[in-house]
Image (cartoon, rainbow, N blue to C red; front, side):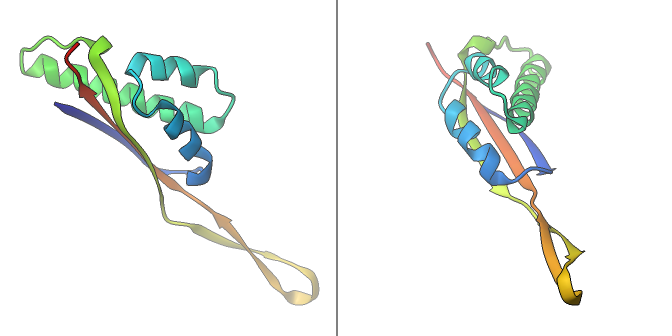
Length: 117
């Protein structure tokens, strides 16, 4: 069974979060949280929160179905970071010209799957 969580419209460029998603893809969820905890990047905090949300979703769904779920068996099957809408601003520059400032956003998606050990 797959458990999903996402953070849409995250105010960080997708380029900054993708290497962190590549780092944890395919790892056990608790191992991925340990890896991200020691990364000095702001995107690591965002990805960590999405993984914790997916773990909470897994626990909630298993309790509502009356099943027991071992969190040690959950693997990050999919960690995807897509680009979101760009917020556009303009800054005045020399001789009356305008310089565009692009504030990029991203969508962070995480899917956990239970594996049989």
